[in-house]
Image 1 (cartoon, rainbow, N blue to C red):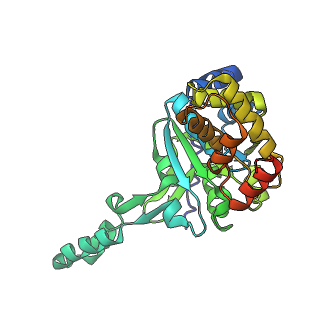
Image 2 (cartoon, one colour; image 1 turned 30 degrees about the horizontal axis):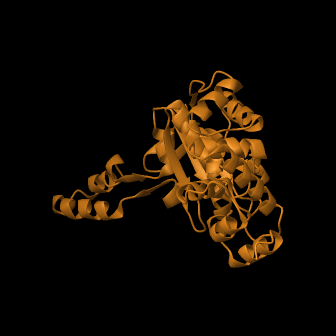
Image 3 (cartoon, helix red, strand yellow; image 1 turned 120 degrees about the vertical axis):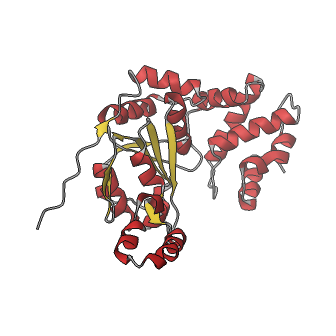
Length: 299
């Protein structure tokens, strides 16, 4: 009995970035302002051909980082959104059963069942899902496996197999190996611990809330019409809110929304009344709004 063929290692795609400064510059051109730890991690993931596992609170820019890398490099973005119950059929591939049944019915008159049986597992009946789609692409690709911690632990075995060889075995068609390794980003909000085996496959980056100066620059880059003194004041208040015991700390995305809100209201200054009236933009729980109003003495 012949042993199954060992898939050849996929070719590494050409480096996307020249150096760490190139990462920072090109990400900034897309509107993503990154600190040195982030640009270094992206550069190393690119050069070493390893997946990048990005962890941190919701709303700090983990998913946006993958989008920015794709935009900065002209790569196609393929996204697998993880959730409880996501399985191989949703992540990797499945067969188009309805189309197979129609094909069987249309070929039943020929009486050649063996030929029909082989035909229904042809390429045209295969529905490619994100992991297989990324593997089969011949153009530069960024594979985003988003919110990995929300998937059941069983799916990690599939991710380990795919990220190890970037090859997928479809029993009816054989082994499909990537022609070039996609730049791969996994994100996690740390709602559960990912397996050590999966972590070993990846480089690790923790993105926390940015420091005030970086957050101010991010805010001004996304809301350029906002006066600098208002941006600085909003970032200062956001920092105070993040120091409170809240159910959900305000994210960078909510800082940006707050800036757009202040701009839309035509405010020249941010006083207690403005903060009280617009807290719902950044705090989405009533208990958080009550606590914040009390600690900020807005009542």
